[in-house]
Image 1 (cartoon, rainbow, N blue to C red):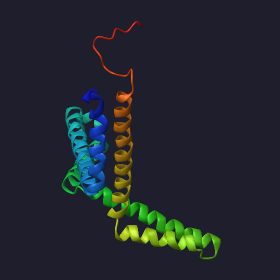
Image 2 (cartoon, rainbow, N blue to C red; image 1 turned 120 degrees about the vertical axis):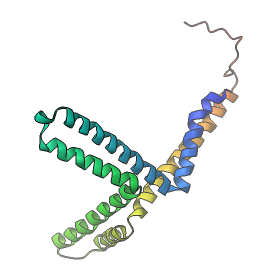
Image 3 (cartoon, one colour; image 1 turned 180 degrees about the vertical axis):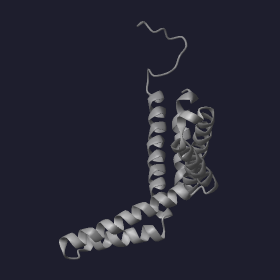
Image 4 (spheres, rainbow, N blue to C red; image 1 turned 45 degrees about the vertical axis):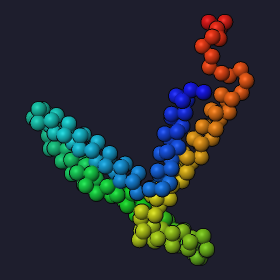
Length: 171
């Protein structure tokens, strides 16, 4: 069995394990990467704005400053994306369940539970991102352990050995 066949599933299984064990690390890394991309985009936009100033105008300057500002904020506050995502989903769930109660004219259990879940997410916004990251990590871990086992089984079957003395007759 060649070790090269196990590299990708092995690394992805390790990534899945890391996401399950430390979900905040993944959220912080994603936020920092997004922040650096926005900073680079803002710097590139600033260079274009400065070199072609008469043609670009004030809108380009405003967009460039906003990109730089958001990029710097995200790179300095790494959990900002995860927190914002949780709060936005929480507000949506809260108001959507409230609208559902108003449209129906009665309070049902599902809308009440949804409203409480929305309130919970507004108060504790990182909970949702941690849950989603852990689910993704668990899926990555399980799928790639399965891939590793399948690759090991495939190379243990008769006739599936990498033998340099075997000549392939088909072109």
